[in-house]
Length: 183
Image 1 (cartoon, helix red, strand yellow):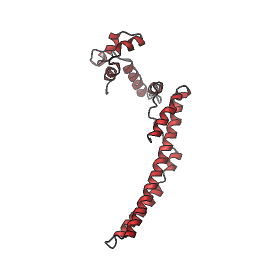
Image 2: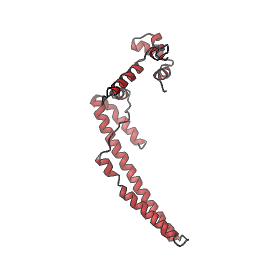
Image 3: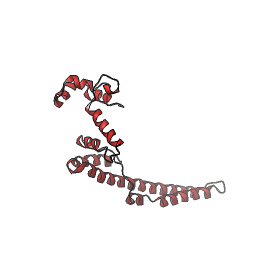
Image 4: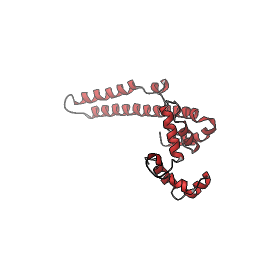
């Protein structure tokens, strides 16, 4: 779906009459929303979808910091929480202990180098290499969990702030789903 009229074709397939009635518009007009608009050389009319996109693009051109607010509102009203751009806070960056990961990886490399020094890897050396790998993987998994938790916390806070208290009642469902899939 790259164009609003194509998205409208999909969304209105089989329900044009009901949608037109709900919006107080004619079925013929709703049909024109599914074609390339006249303003772009087609035979259709600008759909509500196209008008929102044009409004947001105009706001972006005017450098509005909240140009995407209509999309956030629409997504919230439909029960979706859109991706939120967040700056990495000190809290999030402190969760990623790069030095621990580097140390574990360095220990792994040292164990491998020592084991291959004489051209033969003993069972004890292999065991040491496996321990170093396990320790490195454990650190990386802890970092992954910390980063996910921090991003989810920042996203929840930022989303609640953006969509406001009236619409944030749908947020717990979205966040529960995100936690369930590990995002």
